[in-house]
Image 1: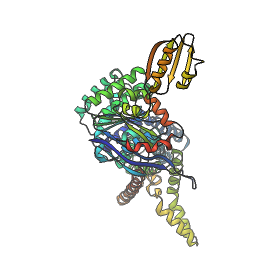
Image 2: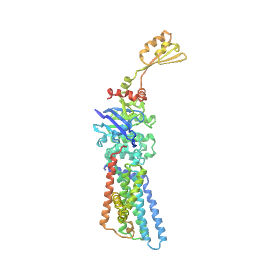
Image 3: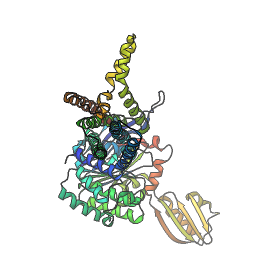
Image 4: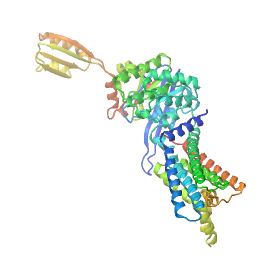
Length: 323
Length: 254
């Protein structure tokens, strides 16, 4: 069961001047988000993440393509009862107190007075803002605003939560709180779709990720699948009592040779040459200290995809891998 | 409470918290100060002058607030990006526009009521008779404010705050001149000028229709039919502008 289905979505903005070509923010983006999963929508600034989210919420109209949320077309007013949204660097009515603010969003969601009172109390506690409940938002710090923003996204207990850069502006404690909150939502069966350019957050909590570059999805799937499929692991070998500088054989197999006193570090591009290198070290009378396979990270994948020229070279690869 | 009511009350609360009603202090000071000055300076007719000045001040302050809050009603939401979380709720864009409009109208109504109370107290203090004509004038001032708010809101759905202010002020000024210009053009011989003036006359709101301050200050009543028709004209004109604002807003990307 998919909660978000995006099919060949495009969005172009006209320049407003005759003769100037339109700017394409999205160029045929397709992806799906399954019910009950945490999906990380990863991409550099300007990749089209926010535009995609805005189309899903009906804030922006797509030029072509289609998007569905909870089996209804994107922008459907009634479906929004089941969707929670936190925009990037949120700005709110800063003349409201935290309680008034959450109560206002509860009313907009059509909740009754009793339910609102209970939800407001629960959420203020959840985002650790009970002490600030009667303070106006104009006196909130950036981190507090982010947290109260999350609370407003959850006031009506939505099935699908869409978050645009939810970790931005938070200190390490705040980031952990948000991560824990997202995980607890998933545990309660909610679907979470969040955009970010912070890889660490994605690696820690996402069930699946999609990498978007220049308005197109270049890869999507489980992180371990993406990393394993795309990257040959390198291997680091540390040894002692061997002079590697003059050894042409080792230099031919290793991409990098670092000699520091008695200790030598060899980096091999693939695991294939490990046996040959270990054999050579022993032959030379050296002592093997460690052999460490270097697992490619999402960061490696991300930088490879985001590298100049990667867009055209890699775009076809997505076809068979999108899910 | 429906979505329109929730948004309207929040807009009203915003104007209270932003201390919009502080203008009332200015109004009261202005009115009382002028009254004292005029009472001292003029030998006769100071009754008429005080009534005239009071109505003019109510009208001026009401229109200024309508324009300068009206033009930022929608733009501010978009520029400050507060609209993202509102539009992500189960609320149609039409309801949002109507909620913002009625929120400002509520603010203006409260504002106008308090100004009227201050005005009446001033008249009472100076032993000036309070006639029904003054209330008729205030009623049409309120209708004019409804129209001006709708004009400002309409422009703010598709243009910047500055441009909206210029356009709204322009329409306001034209709205007060079209009737005079039309009667002048009728005396001329150019058919083209008459045709152009006619287009302006019917396209722009005829705000002079809603201006009965002069006769109200001297206690001359207008016919109830006139009052009703003029009010209806203003409300319908504001309604058409609101429909236009909703239609434009429906097409906007944020």
